[in-house]
Length: 437
Image (cartoon, rainbow, N blue to C red; front, side, top):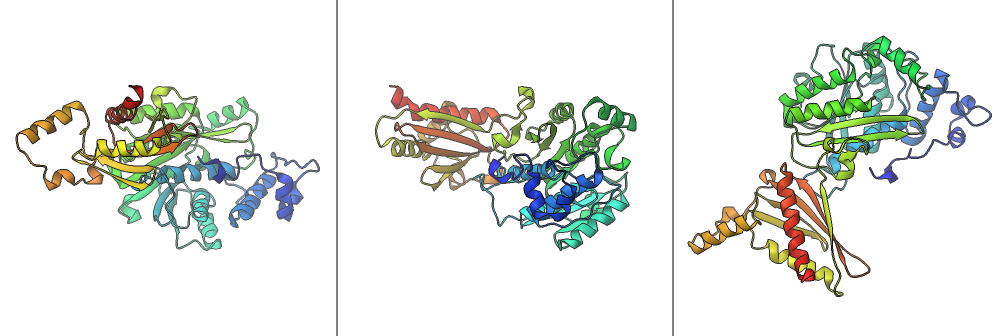
């Protein structure tokens, strides 16, 4: 995640917030600290942050869960990164013209995720569901109060309804699904968990049982989402969920493995000194997110992390024309390849696609035999459908002070990591072989 977009990467300055919010100033103690054991103080913190940082005004019921803004905003930022770095443009950049539609499952008392998402991305729209009628009512009011009725629709669902109510949504496709399921499977687990650790910030807010407890806990909840995703598949680009327990991440990733899902992402949300949450996302498309977006839990066993989508190496510098030589060499290697297309979209970056392995010795020998036998290259062999390409890549070159060239190959599309590794190995060999001689 680009840290410059995370306005809460440091501890919240309560004194500075008090200067912008008289109501929050009333709650601040003389030592500029907040009494987190007081539900009213915690609710006021949330309201003041929303107003100052997002120009959002909300009422928070005193008998429903109070959403911690930094944690919720981190989830939105990660979703933005997932979409930006698995886009068909291949540039890993935010496209301000891209229309995005997301589903928030269990939106809570004020539709916090849709509000944050719409306030930070003008082209985003949401459908938000909840099974609690009071949450539905208060969320609709929050949406209306902030004049976002044309971008956020709140829908009440039943406990036995599918988590993704496709029959009611009246849409062909969703860009993402997000949820923050109840962490606990029983009231006893909730109480024992609270007793086992010091009280975290925001815990003073009184959450209703429907918001905090679900049969089987968060793992069972997400298992239901996985089952439905196996039916809907590419009707949703990214299925995602937040977790309250790190152990749930490992269990969920293993379930994805067991069901043949090979494009997934994990991350960790850290706020303050003790509050940690985790998230998992998975997709049935083969557009690969950037490594820092998909491999965001350092403590997770390596076999549970997705394959890196970056490969980098250095071409040692020999002369001032090292960069131009590398670009020329890439062109010389790529131009003869059939079922292969690439374009330089900047002077030092190109994006390309291949229908299959067309660079290996075996593929080149096959091509040579066909040429020898008089088989002409057809127009179809020169053309390439990006959507059916087995490999999509971006190559970024940068000249260093010692005239060496740094090469980064970004895996942007494909399901076969061996194919990506083969391509990277070929390119490294071709670009460095003259230097090594």
